[in-house]
Structure formats: structure tokens, C-alpha cells
Length: 279
Image (cartoon, rainbow, N blue to C red; front, side):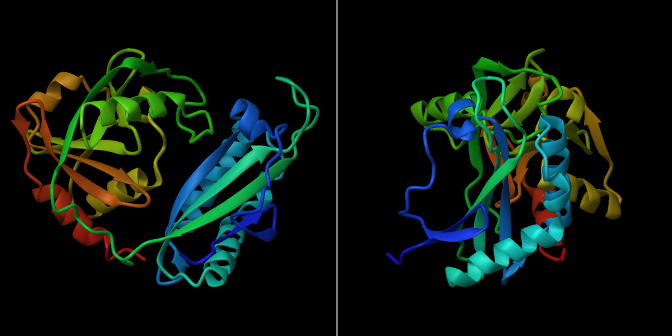
């Protein structure tokens, strides 16, 4: 396998280089956030939306330098790393951490960052040939607070849900919020079609403010599909006509089954076709 390169605080290193030390606050405290991005034909998808979310997250976490992490910065660093790795279609992970000493209380709020890249086969978002089989993870509920909509580096609830998914041989798992309403999945936002209407959990329900969630809602509205952001009782999963999940890398994936319920994929397939026309 060819050696891969990463960007660490503006410098290009081999992925085999030891770059983090034990005092790194992202490692010690999960003190940071991250973005998962997709590159197609050498161009970063939805860079403006990603930059906006990074900046809002850095402001919320009181990490300095957020104005510098704009769409130009993300595109420039992504394209530089892609060229170094000789990739045109790729998945990227951009991490921002508080670059500071101290225990729980940091001695400063400067930022540090890293950018990693892995290849993807296609420039297009592809519909999963086999629908996902899912269930609800109930051991840990997601809290609702001002951090809930961010993609922070504190991901233990998702890790535990991932272990549950693996244990029960599922493709994904639904996560509920502290009030036991539908929130999101391990790695995606949730949409469902119920009585001909398109629903998704509202941001006030504690879900991550997903980039693909925003894009799909925009596409739906442009195509005269009503989108309702709501508090959703998970019991509706037994009645919905269709369920699909969204994230920045995979786009849209349709869910085939939950318990004994089986779903269609008409709306998700329509939206995916429109998504591949977006620039």
C-alpha cells in the first residue's frame, strides 16, 4: 500500500510520523471538534457549509482563530493534501483541538488542527444496494444542550452504540435523546416519510447539525417536498413508509428494516438523484 500523507498544523507529514504528545487536549479531554468531508473530482463538496459549522463550533467552544477557518482555507488545504496523496475522490477528516496546556482549565485557547485523507472509488453518491437493518440503542441517551448540535471529539456514546451495532449484527443504530425521542444514528441524521410527509428530528432534539441534513432539506424544498422538523416518537418507526439516513460522505442511505417493519426507498432514491446534480 502506498504511503499516505497528513496535514498537521499546516505541515505535511507521513501518516507514520508520531505527531501527538500525551498532553494534547483532544486526546486527554476530547477538547475539540471535527468535520468529515467529501471530495469529488478534486473539489471539496459543500465547503461553505462545512466552514460555517466549524466556525460556529469553535465559537461555542471558545477556541480562537475561527475566522481563519473559512471555505477558502478548507478547500486549499484539502486540495493540497489530495494532490500530495494523488487522490481526486476522497473522504477527509478535519480535526480542530484547543492547543493549550492545563488540566480541565486550559491556559490559553489557541487552535491546532489536523487533516487526514482516504480514497473513495466514485465521485458520485451511490445508493446502497442493500437497505440497512437497524434497531434502537437504549443504553445511553444523548443529552440536549448547547454542545449537542456540534461534532465534538467526545464521541463515547457513539462508540458504545457502535459496539451494540456490532454485537447484534446491525448496519446502523438509532440514538434517542434524554427525553427518549428520536435524535440521530451513530454516524448520520435521520429522515422518515410518514403519511406522505417528510420528517426529521429538529435541532432542538439534540441531533448533530449535519451538513447533508441541510443539503437534503434544501433539495426537498426545491422539489416541493414538505420537510417538517419535529419531536419524533420512535414508535413512528413502526408506521413510517420510508426511513433514510444522511451524512456528508455517503450522502443518502435507505433503511430496509426495523424490527419486523420493512420500508420502501422511493423518496430517498429521488433525493439522491437530485443530490448528484448539486455542485
